Length: 343
Image 1 (cartoon, rainbow, N blue to C red):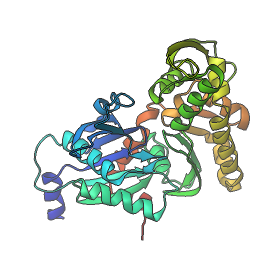
Image 2: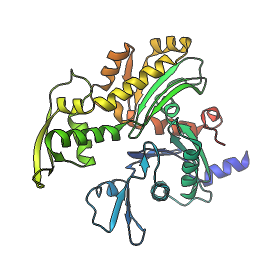
Image 3: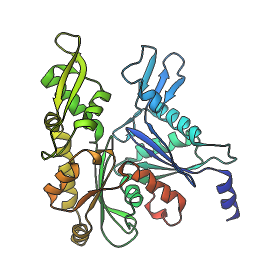
Image 4: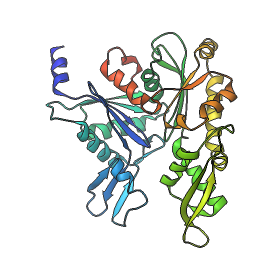
């Protein structure tokens, strides 16, 4: 007990939402202190890290031959071990306001469908980046705790977390997941769909960041959304020169049909697999949406129309997962049962 209190004073424990698009960090006693894009810029010749986060994201698609700006996370899991380790090391150092005698304990949020090999990759990356102990928690449980759902009670709680790389749909009760559906479709697949649509219909090649801006500014999931237009700049595939075209919200909605359809299908599958008693709780309590994808215009309305269930977007949808991990970090004894086991 005494040693535990001393290590608490000597270390600075943190919770990390290691996302495909963004990494958020919660420091015990301070709250959310960092929200940066999950991007690393590396000098090819020396392997030196030139930038991480927002500075590195600004380089995406704009680097000379000697510099690589990469996103080391793909579909919610680690695609590039070394780059992820560098990203974590730099971000952890950034949030450590002073030197501590003991390395921090770290809770990391991961997709519920993660494999044992992927769990080991996350643990190794975090520990090599400077963690003393590493705990993993499934993103939907962290999101549910973050928005204040009573996951410890014998009632059904349902969360749809639409992130950059994955969509996690889970029904929870008594600190555990009863059934979950994890698909590798999220904001990135939406961006790719927009890029392919613009290429196919306008013969214009655009980059990831342009597609993301189209999605944010005029993207929608529901036909009732108001009409919007946006000028898009890219490279003409026929003439090979820069060009500008006008894209409408209706066209973006058409482009997003496939990824959004996959999310709707996954929700229906999850509801079909939910036990009857918990299903009745969901009818009464509704479903909560979190993650950046939940903020797509009309997404909640579309899911309400297809399921006829009460569905709402959580306040602070972008930070719900890391806030939940922070609450777990603040009371590891109470939330011990929600931590992932690994072999």
